[in-house]
Length: 89
Image 1 (cartoon, one colour):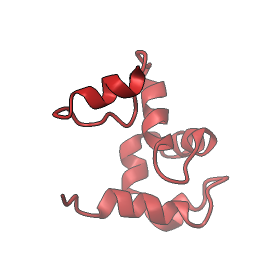
Image 2 (image 1 turned 90 degrees about the vertical axis):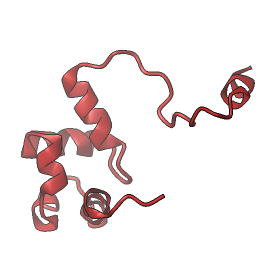
Image 3 (image 1 turned 180 degrees about the vertical axis):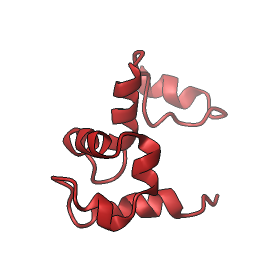
């Protein structure tokens, strides 16, 4: 039934996040940061506590990102790529 509903209207784009209940501002920020590749809820919270905002995380230098525990060596590269690469269709 779910697949039929999702596939029934081909004109609507697929929602990757599904339907979510209303999130608090902090939960929404954690959700955005944790949705980046290689970034789970613990890393998201630690990055937000360290940098204070999603914007500051997105503009942070690789060297600044790697200082936050438990950020792995590849995560800063993925964040920088996501934040800096042009969106092309």
